[in-house]
Image (cartoon, rainbow, N blue to C red):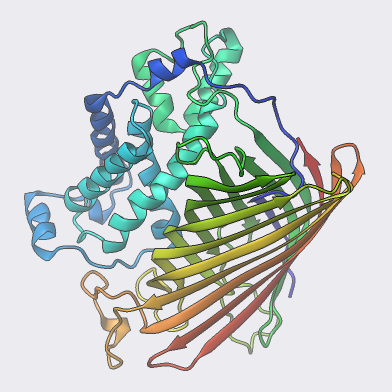
Length: 489
């Protein structure tokens, strides 16, 4: 059965890159002015945000978890941290996004990447221990600060590229409004300090105008779950691809001077609004080869990966509906290798390989359905690789990528446990005892048809294989197809 859908995707590491604006180095006056740390203002914003969020939950939403007291705080300390049972989107995206707000409270007050991560940890710990009458969550205290640093730094860099302290009038108002939307805590800090309307002789950017490449695509996308009912969904898609910085520039020492982002927003019945988000940010790098248009570098990278789907309407009511896939990796770190060969005037070759430790991840479960959770929490490793070919400079490109995730759920429940009668607040398990694999493969081609306009086609395949200790082995295969028009800015 087919259903209409709409989507918006952001992808990573483009084969053909056109610069949006000429590169401009940062002004030393801006760096000196905006790099002064202000501890109490940053801490006040973290605490104030938590109090404001709690007040909204308590007095507007009237959520049960927000009715806190001294007794609830004591109980949280007495019971300690436990694995919770919230939805994938809540645990693996919304909580890291929350962490990005803590992070940018510090980042916008002069603290660097590493220092700001500590504020994210502190804000998360305050919320878990003091601001809810639910037991503090083990997965939240990991996902919120670590995932929050990745999301937060991306938003901080994006907002930095918009700021222009020389501007005035409606144009200045528009810039400041955009900064507030992209990075709310940075926008709030600029309002508190008066920088939002203060006119200066320099732009006010910590990173100047870095090399940024952006492409936007619109077209059609189909998703096909290869089950007994051959369920499918077909509809519109809009895709944006962003690459920030130079993947082979290794003289800088700032985390996320180079990063890529991929996100997919869908408007489709019974499907999640956010179906995919990938962030890959370089922390440190070293050049190991640069001779005759050939470059090679190695580095340490932080990764954030999120894939979500839900039940596709089945054509035959006699068949059981299945969820195609779910994966969340908010905390992952590993080594990366990149190589480029541009020695031939007719073609360019790019390759990359990453090996990562997954400190916290999650993957769809076929058996664990407790409260709002239908996935297993886990840890493990991932391997990512890809190759890009560009022919006739920017006339045609082809790319192939593959991601492999291996996740282990260590803390399970006894096979005789009745999950339907278990208290989700005290169950305290990662899910089913299991070892799961998740593979994402994609083949894409882009052909220039006029100026900066390209015809693009891509095929993606998602394969999940989970071996359970107490249940039968389950496999799942899903295919995605996209045909689009792409405009490279």
